[in-house]
Amino acid sequence: MKDLLIYAVFRALCAVCHLLGRSGSAGLGCLIGLACSMLDRRRGRIMANIARGFGRARAYGIAKRYYEHLGLILVEYAQLGRIDPGGLEAWIDAAAVGRVRDATASGRGVIIMTGHVGNWELTGYALTRSGVPLNSLYRPVGNEYLDRRLRRLRERIGQRTHGKLGSMRWSLEVLRRCEMLGLLVDQDGGRAGVFAPMFGRLASTLPTAAKLARKTGAAILPTASFRLRDRRQHRLVVGPEVLPADTGDKERDVLLTTHRCNLALEKIISAHPGQWLWSHRRWHTAVRPEDARAWSLAASMEGGRAR
Image 1: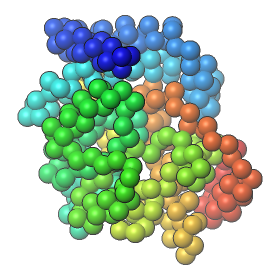
Image 2 (image 1 turned 30 degrees about the horizontal axis):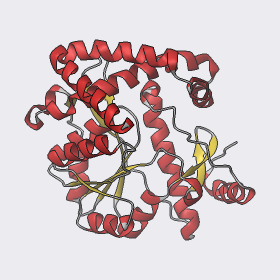
Image 3 (image 1 turned 90 degrees about the vertical axis):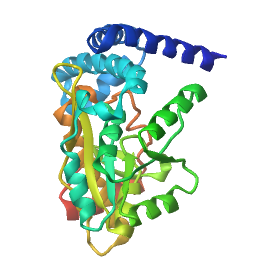
């Protein structure tokens, strides 16, 4: 019943945003963000996370932009179903998709490495315009009604999704067909992850991108879309390819490549720090002595350090 009620409220928001138009919806999003900043019980953790990455002096300003971003993301999600794929230019400058086409033209698959930064759904919308099939691993949303809607929206633009079961085999097949595979890599990896620095502190990180690149030779491209100053338009950004480590030791190579992925993601977040979901428990999994030793040994070859 609770899920259905939440979904009904969301559908009401969709109707309101349709009546307000994009400019009015942006104003509503800013108001929602302000309300969130005053009511969010996780604010202390969010401020601590931001201070970890950018220092206490900048934390307040970044948090203010972060809450505004949350409100804008919500109203943008409410409008996704009305985006005409033929009129995507009104939402996002997707010129950078040429970088993806160039990578696949060399006969390789492409791992689109991104995170919950900017508007990640618009990132997917923009990438489908590249002419290269986009596939993504999918973690279901807790609300079954919202989950069903989101999956339909992704399928509508031609994106193919796959759940956790059998995901490695499916991902290998995607990359061997020289297609795109989208991976969100910015959440805590639990005990399935390897420990590599994220903003100077060891964090459990899923090594999926590193393992897939090692097996297939696929390019790892850090990718995101950022909201511009007018609050409505976005720009797709594709960073330099993350080059896999090659030390001759498989486990160390996976760890070092994962570290390079984290560094690339840090660079993306640092460009627009208010547009990352700082509420994630990114450093939740405790670092064991053996995890710290593994990184210390790898860091001696990579030149990295972490607290």
